[in-house]
Length: 371
Image (tube, rainbow, N blue to C red):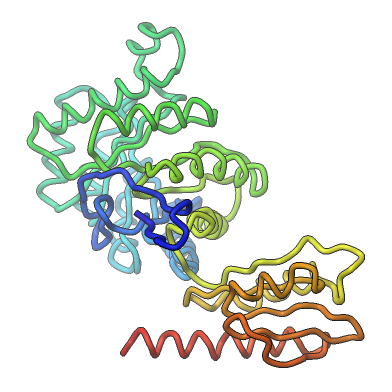
């Protein structure tokens, strides 16, 4: 749970789940909620795929998924897994042999879709390969590719159909004495996905991978994902997540962390609290925040920074942040450190000065953590 004895209304009580390992990343139990993304390069292009993985890892990705639709992809996967700084999940659809090849190539996890992976005999072969090579498995149920018999039974994709699909596949793995699995029940419809995940959380103790699939572009997809996954995370459901966007995978990672940061479930880098700006602003808030977001991307140490245009809310917000700047008019504003007024700074110099202060504070916090 996120524990806050002073403000108990902020507490989130996480669902108790089993813990598995995806490479060296624990998923479930009391492990931090991990953030994933997926490459969109041609996997057989090793250099391009690795470059994308490295960029995603740099902004905080804990796990990266790679599509393996053909033998060229699984051949390339060996070098990708060897050089990747984070565990690689092989995304498998239709052909179970790609899962076996991916396990042999060093994938940390195999994502298989019950709707198209094949019969129990094929699943048994995939399980054997996973066990032999130390892979975990993600059962990835998707509303858009449910099994034919479930669509005939229920008439359309619905929460009951999605959960039944997932539980059927869990039984297949358990019948083969395989327990290193997590599960997802994704849909592009927020209501459908949310209801399915809530039912799934009651039906199994397996770690849950959250996602709103095919959510859309950067802005619309982020809003949709934040509503769907935010609702579930607030209820304590979810052990790992991916924000699925028609955008650069790096943006998926950033948005995933922003969702978790807003709920106090993960902290990474600088959290900027800023006002929308109005006629009272003593400096250009919007341009300042845009500049600071870019200038502070390299900071990984958790820290809060308030950038407020005037003294209506500025001092109050600064009380709650590590560093703050409040516009005061006449071409300058007030710098706050640890909630207290520190010194004035001109608007012209304040961006450079704030970056210096953040970098200094990050170094101090890192030194304290090391001790």
